[in-house]
Each structure stands twice: as structure tokens, then as C-alpha cells.
Image (cartoon, rainbow, N blue to C red; front, side, top):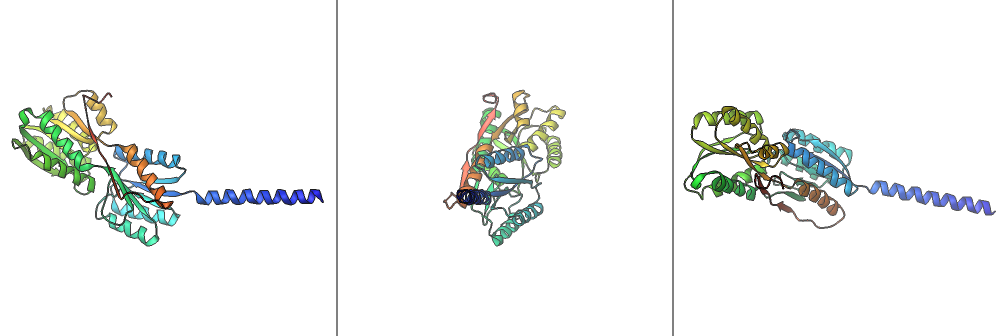
Length: 304
């Protein structure tokens, strides 16, 4: 009789343990994330930090490469929905293209959180760099650290298709116009293409013998422009944006061309957006927009 009771008790305990494990497994959150473009080193850094943050919060995460392609990202969002993720983390490849991704997610009842790049629409929260202030930093650096007496001719290479670069551009030009003796002689849009940034730089150097500085809206384009300026042996200073490892390495060399970049807090952005998604799914309120300020990296602080 005692053995039968013991066996029944053991069976009940085993069932309770199995049920608990089953409930624990089903309670684990899963996220789908799409970074802007793995060809951009900064996106790869963000991806690593997203995975680190998810691991720290015991969240399953699958990260895909958006490849600067809104159509591809919409397909990825659909795949995330089909796989049953609890939330989607998105760095939109374009402002217009984000609409389709938001629509799909909303219809499926899956919340969207944007990071790095933002876009208006149905998202729960966005975490990124204060890109407008980053543009201000770049303009002040060009005007006050590169140009003598805050006068001279400069050029600009932008990326108008994504929101953060639009804000960087606005911050840059709203600030540079405060220096009346600085002339912006060339403004071009590379549309996120490194190859186009190269040809744009070549044309700028051909057209402007007295060009003194170029601000590139992102480091992939700055490093491309640097190679052109270096090969042409021109005395043109370059400022980028992202503080990607390859650009930081060139700044450390003190090459006299690639002199500064605006740094972003990739770890802060990634860890915050993952936490916000977890908090939201657990019923907590999260801020809709969180912007983290950047800072200039140049020869003065690059080794710190």
C-alpha cells in the first residue's frame, strides 16, 4: 500500500515538474529583428549588441539583414509573423517602405519597435541616436576645428532616403549657415551607395580646386571618400558619422585626411530597445521616443 502511494506521489511530482517546464518554455519571449544593412559595419555592431541584450534578458532573437531594401524587410516581417514572434525590432530601410511593414505587423497583432533608423507610423517605441544634434556636432567641428578663421569651401554627401540621415543633414545645415564665411559649394545624395559616394567624391574634387572639407552622412561613405582623396593627393579633410572601427583606425593613424567622426552608442541603443520590448510585453509603459546623444571622435580622444 505504501509503495502504491509512493508511486502515485512520485507520478504527481513528475507531472508537476513537466508542466512547470512546459509553461516556462512557452513563456520565453521571441523577437525578430531586421538591421539596416550588414554591409555597414555599424549595423553589424548593433546586431551583436541586440543578441547580447536578448541573451541577458533570456529572449530568443533572430536577426536578419535588411540590405537597405524595404521590400526585403517587408518579406522579413511577414516571415517573423509567420514564425510566431512576440515582437519585431526594425531599422527601417526607408521612411515610405516602413508603412508596409507596420501594416503587416498591426494586422497580425505583433508590436513593432524601431531602432537606429526610425519612420513615422504604428510603432510602440523608437530608440536611436539624436541625429539632429549629431549633425550640429559635425557642423561645428568642420567650422571651428578644420577651417581657419571659420571660413572656406566645403561639400556634403547625404543619404536622403532614411530618417536618421535626414535629421543629421538638417542639424548640419541649420548650424553651418550660422557661419557666414563658410560656403557649401556642393551637396550630393549617395542614396546609401558606397560606389555612388566614390563617384560623387571624384566629381567634387574635379569641380572644386579649393575644396577644404567634406562631411559624409555615414562612415561607409566617409571611408570611401577618404580613399579617393588620398589617391588624388588632395588636402581635403573628411568628417564621418558612426565611429565605425575602420574609420576610428584611420583617425588613429593621423593621416591628415580622415580627421573625425560622430560616435553613436550602439550598445545603449540595442540594450534599450530590447528592454523596452520586454517591458511592453509584460504590461509596462515605455517611452515612445528615446534619443541618445552622440559625441565627436578625433585625434584628441580616439585613444581614450
